[in-house]
Amino acid sequence: MNEHAWIKEFPAAITVCDEEGVILEMNDKAAKTFEKDGGYKLIGSNMLACHPDSAREKTERLLAAKIKNVYTIEKNGVKKIVYQSPWYKEGLYAGFVELSLEIPLEMPHFIRT
Image (tube, rainbow, N blue to C red; front, side):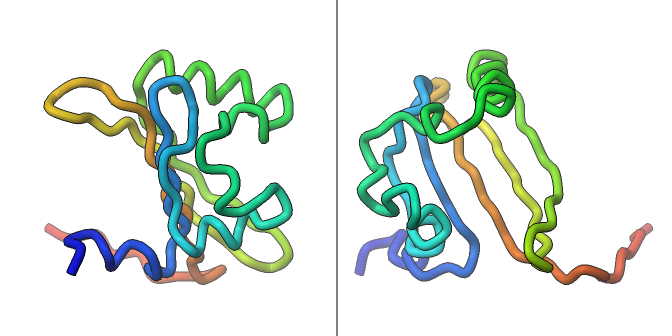
């Protein structure tokens, strides 16, 4: 069994791009999320082309600065947390991973000590 086989059907959208923004991998949830844009056919294309100007500029800054970006969004009654973070291969910057996970509209928050 492929050691990363669990990713394919994991219920969060996972998209991986290189340092230029070219999509290298995506799982089933990401392909479904971006189905109107081509789904799995997006692999090999630059994800910057999928963003409107303001989002593209922000994404270009994130790729260049190699810093994470985390936010929540709500669309059509579905709330998601989006976690975009650099990834590294053998210690060298290799691009970004985006995780997009549906979360409840209201959810408990715990502070642990």
